[in-house]
Structures are given as structure tokens and as C-alpha cells.
Length: 151
Image (cartoon, rainbow, N blue to C red; front, side, top):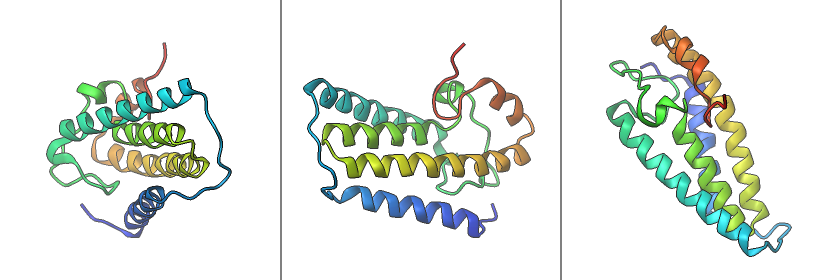
């Protein structure tokens, strides 16, 4: 695994966004209906569950960097049977859900930035995966990036 500047940049921006998310900045506060707050809790819990399961399924293949580890294997079962990047999916659900629950425009904004970052990072990651695993192209054709394909 040769980590380059692009790998370090993606991970650094991700860490900065996680740190920014922790702070509670009051920008454009809003009130939500109780059902929206409850939906936020459900999304947050679902996101945590998906992330934890995904990490456990990746096991020793897990790396914060987009470049696969040298001895890694392509995981296409479990949650990965339905979604190519379930850890990112879980983080998106978790951060967006908690943003809804806490009625925080700031946290929802950070969630949107994380979603954009994960879109860029996963595109780069998929280039690396296709290089290492030629069968990744077929896997990519039948699974969704962050959420299951419909139909």
C-alpha cells in the first residue's frame, strides 16, 4: 500500500470535518416537529449500526486510506453485498440524523460536506480497487455506492 498526498488529503479533510462536527455552532437555528427529531434518532442509530457491522466485516482489511492494503481481500458479502461503501453510508446517516435530532443547521451542513467528501473519496477509492481487483467492475455494476440499488 503506497500512501500518497491524495490519500493523506482525503483523510485529513475527513478528520477536520469530524472535529468540526463535534462543536455546536448556532447558525440558523430551527425548530423541528417531534416526528422529525424521532426520525433523526432512528437515522443516527441505524447509521451507527451499519458502520459498526461494516467495520467488523472488513476486519483486517480496514484502512482509513482509499488505497487498499497490500494483502487485502475484496469483501462483497454481508452489508457489502448491498452497498459498496457502507461505512460512509453509516457516517452520513449518523451525522445527518443527529443534525436533525439536535435541530442544528451547522451539523446538517457538515453532514452535507461529509457526503460530498465521501463521494470524491469513494470515486478515487474505486479506481484503486478496480486496479487491485479486476472483478470490482462487476461488483460495482450490481451494488449501490452508499445506498442499495433499487430494482
